[in-house]
Image 1 (tube, one colour):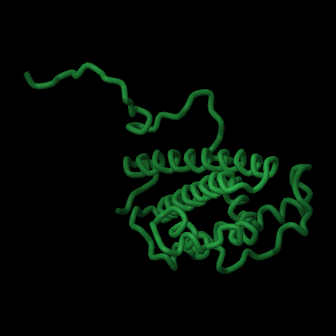
Image 2: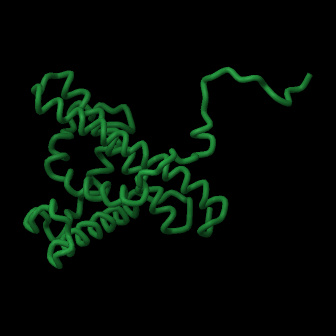
Image 3: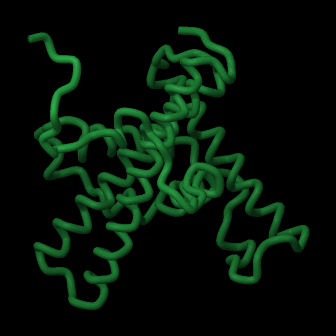
Length: 201
C-alpha cells in the first residue's frame, strides 16, 4: 500500500517501528547483561543458552525494524523480495560505517570512538544476506539447521556492522523520553479485568 508521510498509514507504521525498536533495544540490553554474566562466570551451557537467545532476539528485532524502515523510505508497505531487502540493508550498514569513518577522519568523533583501523572502508557484501539467514534459522523458523548454524561465527564476523546500525538508529528511535510513548493498542494492553461499557443488555 502506497502512503505519504504524515497520513494514517504512516502514523501506524511509525508506531510499529517505535515498538519494534524498543523490543530491539530491550533485547540488546538483555544480551549485554547476559554476555557480561558469561564473561564473569564462564561459558556454562545455561549461560550460553541465555546469551544466544538474547542475541537472537536482538538480531531478529533489529532486522524487522530495518525492514519497516525500508517500507517507510519507499513510502510503500509492500514486502520486498529477499535480494532487494539485502541490498537496502547493506546500503544502510555502509552508510553508517562511512559516517563513522568520516567522523574519525574529520575529528568530529567522540573521544571514546575507536581508531580508524577498527572500521574497514567497505562492509562485506554478504553481511545482510548472512544476517537474514541467521535471523530465519535462529529465531524465525524451527529448522534442523538451528543446532548446526554457528551464531558465534556470525558474531565474530558481523557484530560490529549490526551494532553500529543499531547505535545509529537508537539516536532517533530509542531517544529517552520523560514519559513512555503512547503506542496505541500496544500500550493499552491490560490483563486487568475491567467493567464493560456499552455492552448489549
